[in-house]
Image (cartoon, rainbow, N blue to C red):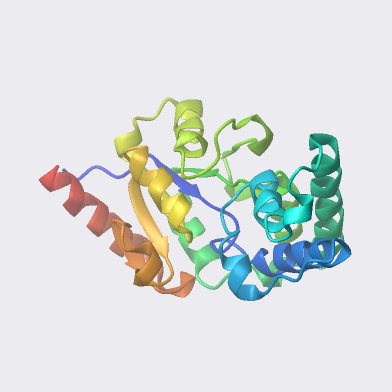
Length: 227
């Protein structure tokens, strides 16, 4: 099979830019307001997880908050988002991770569609600050995705928008939940990060600057020869 894939689906955090630091600072600030201390190690468990689920994990650290009413949880989740929005206003095109613009350019040159599949409801705003909005043919609306990663819904929603078979899609992720979602969708998964947590990826690179369009395509084609 010499055919190219028809769609690349990118995660946002840790793939196009690293807003993980801003999320961490925002959650840390909210946790402190609740009398809870979280560190970077704990924050790793929140990566790729939805806002409400992340809040639940933080509240679980303080048993007295276990029975908090839903309205209060929603208020806290919104407050975390306000903290986050203040932090991300400092984002500029300099915050695009190394190698990403070149990869996006190569995909465009080959007339392949590009979508964004992020759990972040602020994704369109972040793309705007990074000045990369024009690369994306479609952005999955996180507010309409009922089941977050590792459920494949985010990725299948992007493919369904174009009517592209899942086997002809490539997904890029830096979280275990994200890789699992791509694999469960029956798509080709490209992982960015350590093998210790991303061993399920079809193809893995340690950093974004190691993402090479031609190498990804070569590996993608190999996998389709055997399938």
